[in-house]
Image (cartoon, rainbow, N blue to C red; front, side, top):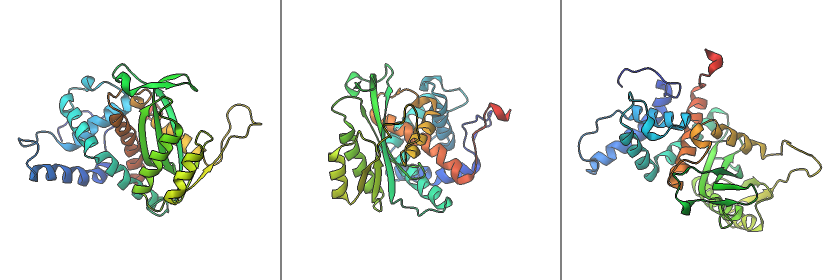
Length: 280
């Protein structure tokens, strides 16, 4: 890796050691298959550092500092890793490691489902946007499943419209989560998820329980079980690229969520934290 100033978002040696085998195997597989043409020029660690920089700071790809590889190269790897499921695989692997470190079985048996509507930028095609009438937001809706520690198990991003109801998103998320985590047998959801999600969960062997907010409590209150996923959404929003949906494609948006969680998970496994102004 070339010498340059260290950014707070950069991977440490310990964190890179968790990620490197998967990326090295991906590059080798492409080389063996004759994909990619000429010999790779740029270090995979620097490519991943650049992606983390975009994810954490929220800048446009074209504004990447010049001491990173060219933005076109970084974006090319980002889209290739999205298409090949690399971020999904890394999230799965690291979730197992983080659960084991916390004294849990690598495979979760219970989870929590929720959605979040966010505004889109002008990059997003109109066809991939919608209107969340309840929250009066024009944009996209994120649906996620976490385990009881708040670690990501599945994600979907779609237009925030009536056709993208919580039921539709919930069914998709249950399918994703069960396929990746066969031991999943219980999930908690809010009142936005109706009978269709509960019935679909039953066909998968998942007990879906609705946890509603106490109607007698005004304002904010901690809701049993669901507070875990609310905290996860808070973790995600610390990454400025996710404060608004800037991606042209919903799949790229889902990757940005996975990257934020990969950042979180590698720190959990290695007991590291992100430096802040308090550390100066």
